[in-house]
Length: 412
Image (cartoon, rainbow, N blue to C red; front, side):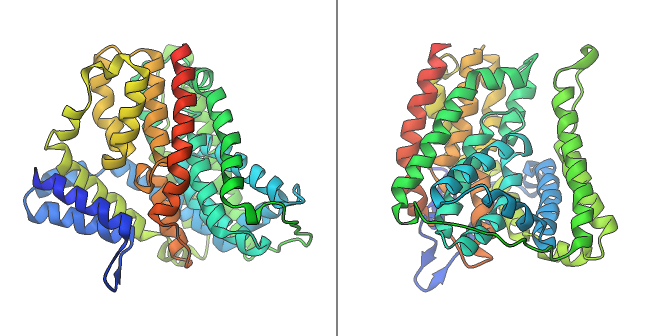
């Protein structure tokens, strides 16, 4: 077996157990050691490692981390949450609204963005309402992954597929093929959560007092940031319709930079905010790109995709879901989408690639980067989700949603 594959397997196992003897590891530390091992053992050269790092993704995450930290620091995030909770009288209603709100926002703000800003919200609401924080973190992970299926800008791999798939109306295509199974899956997610956390269902919840802003000045700056992000997203949506027959695009990094710029330029807390952002998660992404670059050179996973996958919804969905556990969904789509497009993939098969690579994030923690972002941010506040706790919901939920999506897409 190639040494790069052995390193990847070791990384996967260490992330699963997270502890060796008295030493407990964080996800970013394990991935970092794996990347260093790949470099030291010559599995990837330094120039190739540098080229494997996706700068666009890093810039996007950095910008959104700045916005997310400012939302938490200003207290604006928690003021918004008070309005959310005011519509609920018990925890059953609350979890339903929480899941659908996070899922809907994920479809248009991207799942990684919701992972960044949703984690402190989940921690705050869990502590304030007296419901399980673990339940809210798990709900957040599964809601933003499932919701992001719905839109071509719901996650990075969707955007790659939409831009390379030649769709004349990507938003309409995604909604037509994936809308109904996504909604059904979200309803089922609520019931799965209710079954797994019965002690938290039915509790009376109430927040009557108004939550004051911690920093009104920063909150005013954030309104500008949110307005710019919203404008850029709307512009992105409009431009994907190809007005005047010309293809335009708003780069993802530009959206994040537009959101972060007011905080950096106008806020007096800019240095404190930058210091507090989640730097370990950025290290995780850099390390992941380097390690995956080494794994790609082995050709192992390329050979693992059957030639018939391009014409089979079931085969493409299951292959996407399983391989994304090992090389993550964004690198998987970046590697395989051009090959599958050349093989004459149908629209239904393309949507199976979208669904399988995205819903891979519901099977294990490593299936989606957004899961890692949630856990990294939660661990900074003393909370976490273990590998087995995640899979306790991930395995049955993935089986059920897999049947739903495969059957629905096979109809087309």
